[in-house]
Image (cartoon, rainbow, N blue to C red):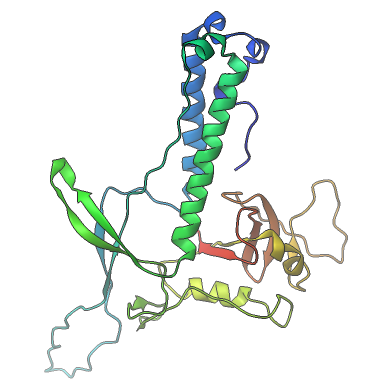
Length: 292
């Protein structure tokens, strides 16, 4: 998410930047602050939609359809009832953060519209950083942890200690795979070798996500800046078409498109995976997900 120098609500007020708030009109400036907050929240919600879903449920149980096959029967046979057993439980923490700015009677009287804009931009930058860090922590931390749920609906007591689960990490939880098989899984992958044509992780990434019937494409991989050069050097990598260039007859052309989402630049596609550079990621890390 790009940091603006002028908050949304202050666009069109640049001619008043050197004017004190008291002279420009406190109500006018307050409206600019509110409009800036509303637009910031709208943009943040749109960006988070690809990775985050809102919920008011502290904990829920996912029931999975049983795997297996039918029981063989003859013309007199009756199948034996089968007990469903596949399920897993997840929980969600509430994590808050905030910032503040204020004035005294002297600084309030001298505060300009530009200084107010700076405070708003700084607060929004901190908010974007906080959200980014917590979303990445939720995805990259492979360990479970305990959160104390204190407050329930309508003022009732919460559930107490609930367990926050990571992604599939090779533990005892089983998931449904295409074909009806139930199996454990591990979606935390790594390799010691640098990415090249002999050590290409993207076919494995694609297969790991698409082996589950609840997933569908496109598969998007957000990659750290330190990985972009080696990824772009892969033989199967097809870059995003430069609108200023005409592709020659002997070159593959990427005709599809992808919304940028969290990332900074859509680089191209390799082995069925869209590659998006996300400069905020730690060095040598990736986050992949199926958008469908």
